[in-house]
Length: 84
Image: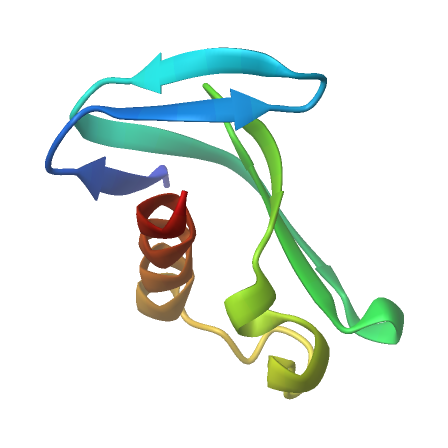
């Protein structure tokens, strides 16, 4: 199964190490999801960007391991990108 997030418009982001990347509208492929219960952290790796820590699902917002759904993960990624 492949999980993707859809961008309705192009988005320019700065990755680490600092590199400016323009993401085209359309689907972004999520390569990997890492749930770190001890750190209360959820990270995703996006093909074009690299690692993103999803604050919306981490820290005080972290409930229990793997309690997030594909839908909540996609929403958190879209919110992260919208805030840039």
